[in-house]
Image 1 (tube, rainbow, N blue to C red):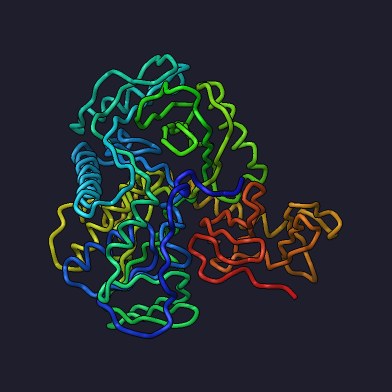
Image 2 (tube, helix red, strand yellow; image 1 turned 180 degrees about the vertical axis):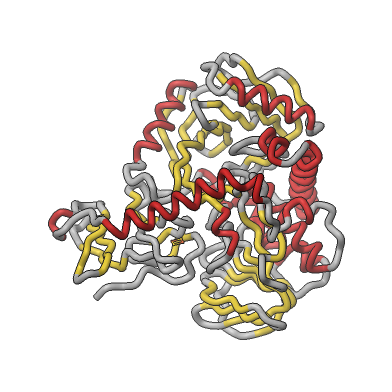
Length: 496
Ligand code: FES
């Protein structure tokens, strides 16, 4: 079982060329996930000439590894936290804008006849064992104050102690959607390039966006890469987290369509079903931890599988995968012109709610570029300063980054290559430099520099995904050192 999500079933991925010739566009979009492809759609519809530059394939970053759930509510610290940190007005703006984003997705699907299993379904938050009851109560109050259609019933299989549902939310196959949309918008004025990793972005009257083999120049740049590539102020306000998903065949037809957030001690497990060729599948997503700070992460999959077996009558586990998210310090994403820039837009801090926020970011940024007044721009301003609302999470994340940086520079895992076992990765001092040493299934050693090229932290081994992950801002690298995701632009240095 590889690290492929359930959405890869039945989807024929796109096949766009790599960028090979230089040209000029109105807008260069870095990243071909839901944010980038939706922005390309909206901007080209508004008459702009656009180029999308995707490092791999469309939807193969975070979009294809999400839950496929679309909702106006928010995860993480919840809706009540927005009201606490700001006020009810801000909460209503967030909920209203997220509702508009889900509506836009539905409208695009209908208008372009995209087959992606979209359906309206309720979203439910509840506790079965009575855990986090207070959180459930606070969220119900906040949902009512935000004007959402709240009902008390929760159509879950296990007996629910307390909970509520919000009607008319939605689900779809996110990979089918973004692939379907990309295939429809490709044209002479909206060009999509795959296998075109961006290695340099320079701001100027004319922006310069370089890939490994070519470049485009542009009037504006959108960093639609989940977290902006390179060094940005916003990285100090984001917490990078990893979470896991397990999908198994469901015996019987007991769970109706819906988004189920089953409260555990301090977080929720997100549960939903999906109809596949193998029958009905139930999936659960959860077990979040900071990137690079849990080497023995196979246990996350085991815990999720145990949960599925406890709650449902399930058969074989058919998929398991993991995904990344970036939590904003004040609970609200950063969307718009980046601090200190004039022509570069960022869209980040979506936490676990990236499909809806990604679509919303595309709406806001495309309006800003085309000169339309977007009524939610001010809600998400990327260069905002919110010292009071941000303080607790800002301090927590940055103390953690400083701690990881100092701790890792002082310590090594092993002293000899022989101490690195098969499928393990260890940090070792070789001639006074930190090296990341991995032994593959055939006993071959792969050695790269352990110093993250983003800002110099030391990478950690990720057992479940066999990758080197940076605990500071979430960059991830393959065992050969190639960039998988995160803000790093360059790979881990090769060692001969
Ligand atoms: Fe910033 Fe590694 S991601 S130092």
